[in-house]
Length: 140
Image (cartoon, rainbow, N blue to C red):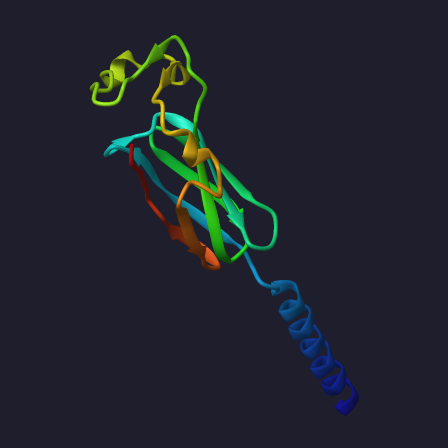
C-alpha cells in the first residue's frame, strides 16, 4: 500500500511542476473603444507593441476592438484607420445614421498619421495577465 501512496504523491508532484512550467509569463487580452474627437472610429487596426515579445493586433469595428494575445508589460500602441473608401467623414461632420452604413468599410475617418508610428503616437499601456479594458481617445 505504501508503494502506491508514494507513486500517487510523485504523480501529483509531477503534475504540479508541469502546470507551473506551462504557466510562464502569461498573456493579456485587451479590449476597449477607440474614439477620435469623441466619436467611435468606424474601422481600422490597433497594434500593441510590447518591449519584449510579439506585437498583438486587433481590428477596430464601430469603435470597438479586441487584441487577443499581448505579452504582459509596457507596450506602445499604434492606431490606423482603414484606407479611404468612396465616402469620407470629415472631422466635425456627423456620422451617417446607422441604417445608412450598408458597407462599413466605405466609411473612413482620417486620423493624424502620427498615430500609425510607435515612436510618435504617444499611446502607451501596461498590459497585465488576463482580460482587461483600455479605451483610446485620439486627438486631432
